[in-house]
Amino acid sequence: MEKIDKIIFGDNQFFGINHMSQEKAQQLSEKFFNIENIYKVYDIAFANGIQAVMLNSNDRAREICDYFRNHKSQYGHLSWYPSIPYPHKYANMVNEKGIFPAINDVLFKNNTALGVLGMVAKGGMAVLNKDAIELMKMLVDVEAKIYKGLNVKVIFLQNIIVDLLLGYDFKDVFYEYCEYIRKKYHAIPGLITQNLPFLKKKLEEWQIEEVVICSSINKIGYLMSPDVPTYVETINNNHSDKYQLMAMSTLASGAIRAKDAYEFINSLNLQSVVFGASSEKNIQETVSLINIK
Amino acid sequence: MNKIKLGIIGMGRMGITHYSIINSHPDVEIVSVADTSKMILDILKKYVPDLQVFKDYKELIDASKPDAIIVCTPPNLHYEVCNYACEHDIHVFCEKPFTANIEQAKELKEKFAAKSLINQVGYVNRFNDIFMTVKKYINEGLIGNIVRFRSEMFTCTVTKKEETESWRSFRENGGGAVYEIAAHAIDLVDYLIGKPDKIVGTSMNQIYSKHVEDIVSSTFVYNNGTSGTLYVNWCDTSYRKPANKLELFGIKGKILADQHGLKIFLNADDLQTGYKKGWNTVYITDVFTSVDFYVRGNEFTRQLYYFADSILKKESGNKCDFSAGYDAQYVMNQLFVDSESNKLN
Ligand SMILES: NC(=O)c1ccc[n+]([C@@H]2O[C@H](COP(=O)([O-])OP(=O)(O)OC[C@H]3O[C@@H](n4cnc5c(N)ncnc54)[C@H](O)[C@@H]3O)[C@@H](O)[C@H]2O)c1
Image 1: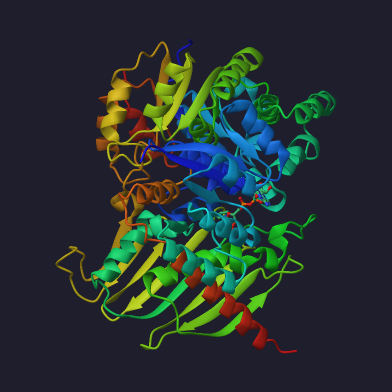
Image 2: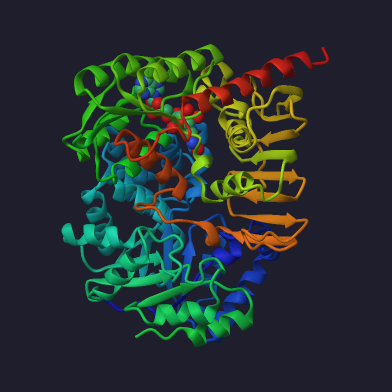
């Protein structure tokens, strides 16, 4: 499996997501309402040596991707780590209509930007066969379109989907997702989870390998089920040729000082860290603190 | 008891989530699901071959003989499903709102209590790390007697005129901002302060909905002199995720809380907790405890594990039982009555 970047720049800070404080999130979302301010922060990150970006397929991802596509000469060397889908995008539709009508709308109605014809033919079939895997592939295609033409290294499935499916023990869906990402997109399949030990155990049992697993990892155990010791054991017994492990939420939404947070991270057998920050000082500091093998 | 044999009735949004969560419990085996939609049944059958699937919940109960069920149908069906389960001595976890009718809530509460079956309603905030912490501080008297409170909840559930109507569009089916959203804000008041003795000044607004309310506000009054206000809006697009907001004013200080954290203002240092006179901030990261399996927030796992563990007699089962479901139902019913009487024409 191709090695992933050690340091990846995340995007939560841009989109009013702060698990700790709605107020802080609000301030940031105001600041980054002007998309130029987002590009400025990216440039600071790149100037500090970062060459990889994780981007959630939210409302603004398309615009951001367009920008980087249009400035290929300047940004062509970057690696992209998209994560799909953006759940809130679908939440309201599901609220109003129920799950299947909402999927139907996503695939067949809101499809101005999609390759409509092929999609409809395929979709008609999938709905007829009630084939969850075909549906999954179509939803992946809808989301992956946003990143077309960028150098996509890993395509992550969001934890809200991964952990839901994990509870169902749906081996086939995981297997097919991973194969689809490899074959159609020539990227490494990625799974985001809040249940790293359980997911990894299941993947081993199912013999699904060469996957990137991204998970909250911090020394206080925030958003880590079941607990820190089980995580540490899982991480330190991992073979990185089978599973590359990426840490997110390393500061536990700011509960841990950066220095302490990365002391813990650096002591673990991790392959990558994704972090978000919006000031030059924090970006510089984080880059200098991350020292994984 | 061997593994708990569990059935899930109503495999919509909540049913789908609950399945994933409770399936991870080591002492639970999901044996059956029921839904009137064939689509979801076919998909489940395909990927979980051993699962028994039914279009009719009565058949599920008769044929798969579960020890316990989780009810996630639209609210107007909760009563008949729970009732049928009770007749067959089955433990029930029922989603909120408990019913869409006050008499039915009372009847179910009494029937289940008489049979000593485990019964729980899905008021998930009672299992939230922050609100559990608030409850503990109130009980310990951190801010003294509470004189005044505000309980608010904001979501962006309905953000335009609906193209199609569903159960959410009609009050008699359990739809509307009161049943869907305010239920949670009301239950938090019941849980933290108690059931109000009188409800006054209720008003409701419509923005997008044709038949049901989009906004509700009201005042709760207590015999001991406490009072507080409720304000709930399910059309507020400034909130990306549902948010509960609480303000509790006591004679020794006040607490501001939401799902992410709490701020405590004290009139004097508190020796027991170590909080200082003035403002103290408590983040979710200071008070959370992990759950064994995470799908959608610790509280969702905790509430279902509590249900299973109550059946296994490891928990008492009374943290959010049908009498809590009835209490919230009573308040919601009063809101409807009071708002009618306050209309100008
Ligand atoms: N605790 C929470 O935070 C929370 C959040 C959302 C919903 N809820 C509650 O959960 C319940 C379900 O809500 P939802 O959002 O999942 O709704 P939904 O419409 O997505 O799902 C309801 C399901 O019930 C099925 N159903 C209808 N009639 C049936 C019958 N006779 N037998 C079996 N199945 C039947 C429908 O086909 C559908 O799949 C409601 O009471 C709702 O208020 C709670």
